Length: 486
Image (cartoon, rainbow, N blue to C red; front, side):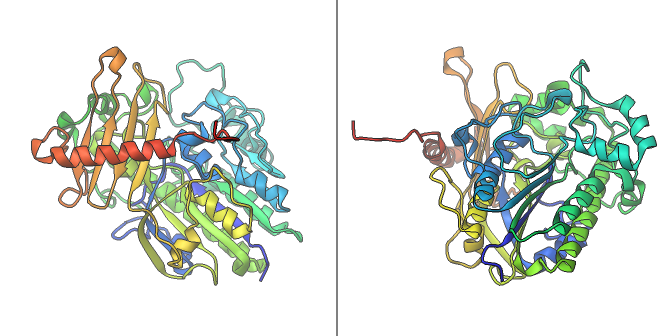
């Protein structure tokens, strides 16, 4: 066995916890992820530290919470002072590669994302299928492999000059399987794995699916006939007791820049949900190909494989689509599988709370890297072996992290096994009061009944809010070195 493992991180985008076959009762058709779970360990309660892309992706590669690493919103670049695990691995002799999305800097409307000191020797970047940057590696591949499809789709590309941008399907999203972004990620990841040399590798394979806009090739959509996916949980009537901005988001997702729940009929919502699952099944087929490559190259036993997502998707639950300040489980709870033969138990499940930011600590520990002083994560492999416990809580924070609100939207989630509080922070200077959500998960696991203003739950609300405040202090950036007592 290699002294240091190869490391393959497979990350989907906007993939909720229950849309995978490893979740009990799920209708998701994901046989390859089931196979990966039989080889490794499923973490049943993995949470994103933020419900949008950039803050959580930065957490995954630094090991810090967003309030510590400083990339607090989409459109913000990770501060130079933060250390990416990919850079550390490259310095330690790893051959490092990225295929797909990165999003640790601004990439709005076709901009080329600023390259960081990331350590990637292979850097095949494409923010999303429709991104108009000339550096979009998916477009370059598409032009070479399928020039007619590329030429037709280029009339539908998203560029910095596009005004009033809204997230809607483009021809790039609706490519046939052989020309799709998902197939490109699978093919280029496979090529990296097949081009092994004497060095251990670290490869980050970032699929864009099942992120909106929602589109899947017909042969995958046909796997999910009408009614095959459960309907949304909750409805517009349940929003009456929720913070007002949830009612706003029900009619104007992404501050009006995305498809909104109340734009669609129930039949259309069902179609969106089925399309979402179809996108996941296509990714699952790609993951099966990657696992086959590991086997054929003799790499399976020596490779740590981590499957995870950056955050979830509301998918019509609570009369909401997409994501935003909302911190329901569908928005922040994600699938996580860790496989590493002889180091991680096979066919095992962990119920303790863990987070996406634990990925960085896990990689550092497996590769034998020096501990990073700012790392706030856990070694997931040690948790699988029972050498340490996970957490007794889950945490997520949103600091106007998506499309900006006026006034800014700030929310914090803290949940235990029995209850969850979501604080919608006020602004004392502006006279904006604090409000929030409180759920008794023992009787209401779907988070339908908000007890925030219920006098019978006052003590629980105060207790959870106080614990959330304590954790917020522990997570904040306090890393300037102290060189003397005074």
